Image 1 (cartoon, rainbow, N blue to C red):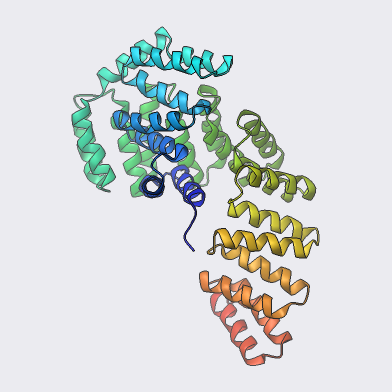
Image 2 (cartoon, rainbow, N blue to C red):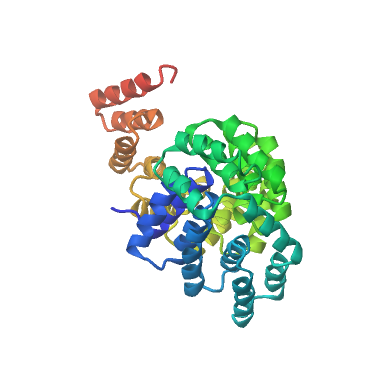
Length: 404
């Protein structure tokens, strides 16, 4: 079964957050081939373009997103930000008037007006003057899109002799080094962009992602917080901040971050899902089930939320309900091996051994090095008097993990 558009969007967002720009582009492009006016995919493609300095290329994506769904504040903010950075101030003023006609809240309109303040205009003009001409940058963007990261770095460093205050060049160097796994060099480049433009939330966000990769989660937290101090509605920074608090075991802080995020963006399915994970870890099963249900209300095709809901129900010994939810998860995403595995545990718990056997085998077919699944498969095979098959399953588990 092919993944749904929503699943492709989730995969794209996940890759985007992890700094896997080419992978994110692949998912968003696939969505737009099927549904060219998909608002979220268009907006995210615009964000992706901005992150590598393709400001002009981002505008059509933001325009489509707004035309299709003008009720999302972030679509307006993203579009206006690029217009300002391109010094298209008259177009920016017209956009704010259009936003007012569409009935945006006073808070949102005030933020849009603030973005167009005199100080921002001056900062933008300086930034544009500091960057190479757009045609010159375009060749670098094309090289980046083709995966020629070393060429991007060498060419950008050469251009820095003429444009030493170019945030676009430092951003490209950072993104290219990150893609090559040169994480220290990437952080250094993003930091230089921040030195030039201290109110650059994306650069703080990018550094935080890298710090998480190198197990400096506590340092990452300060960078996410800095990004949020600049842009209090930077939803991805909120989400990643919550994930980072989870990573270091600070579950109370994670809960507060997710609740704060959901007050800002009540339709953020991933925030509900992550909140559910933390609440389950704290043993608050009813509350976690409520959170997963919130995620599924926003996005009924959210396979991971179905899977997590199934686990919480299983924890409450509501085995049959859990099985039905696991079935929904694997129907949406057949490759969700953990859902097959946990469905096997649920079947095993009610002595439906053949069904458990099939579920474990399905999990193994997706993840051949799944030692736990082989071990549990051995248990249900032995209980069905399939002794030689059980021995083979146990041996497979031991070959994967000799200390099992």
